[in-house]
Amino acid sequence: MKKLSVIAFGGNALLRGDQSGTIDEQEQNVYDTCQYLVNLIKKGYDIVIGHGNGPQVGNVLLQHEAGNKIYGLPKQPIDFCVAETQGSIGFMIEQQMRNVLAEQGIDRNIVTLVTQVVVDKNDPAFQNPTKPVGPFYTKEEADQLKADKNWAFHEDPRKRGWRRVVASPRPFEIPNWKAVEKLAREGSIVITVGGGGIPAYIDDKGKMVGIDAVIDKDLASSLLANKIKADEFFILTDVPNVFINFHKPDEQKLERVSIPEIKKYLADGQFTEGSMAPKVKACIEFVEGGGKEAIITEAAELQNEKAGTVIYG
Image (tube, rainbow, N blue to C red; front, side, top):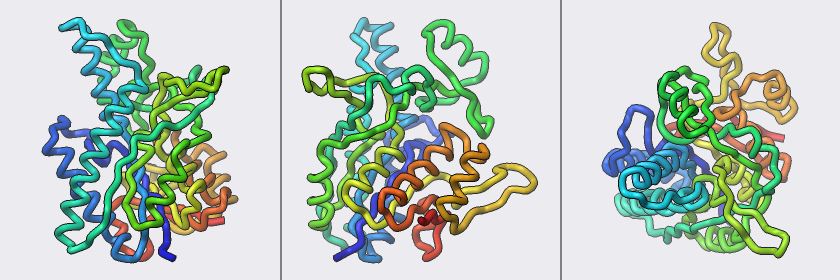
């Protein structure tokens, strides 16, 4: 049986901070990422792809705001906007993966699944928004938007500006995970839990209801990886390794690190919420949930045998 891996990469890998977000820019970024992902397929992996949508969903929300202000069009809730980006980003990944596989002479089915993910409507995260969405703003712009729209903002850990933050509740169920596993183990490349999944909760009557939130894509992908009994879990980000004392004179790269060790670093505040902390937590949950190894790295490192920071039990 082939190894099964779940690979999660962020919305920033699709739309970079210095880009305006044209379709040409995003398709080129996706194409570049897929060229690296094909290295895993060549090594004999079956793969499931999860992705973020932070920049994209923030932009879609702004589009709805503008449409409402200029044309009187009704604004749609965040879960609806997550569904929009899940479809559009899934389309881009599927299309560019097909292009890359064709160039490599590899024949695989590719399936994009629109996926809801269940959360608890009473999750404390709704009282403490932490998930960055949309573009960067100056402090002055962020203060004005906070006053005008009652949005919450956090400063970027790397001092690139201020971003709107929304609630990010924990995922606890993925209703279609069995379909994902079946398709993946049959050899299809599956794109799912896009943007962390479309957030929903189960009401008192057992009905699924959408809710305003953006679920962390790493936690949702980790949950999925455990559900489908994946062998490995990859998180692709914009740095080749996890570091402690990041951007300080005594910065240290982590290569292979045990669960107790990475938990200590996490407790010591080495990793920032809204940045590396959720990635580390997702990896811990995957390994403690029965996974073999979790790897945090950048896409270009996938061609190397000893890529990134490996977290093991």
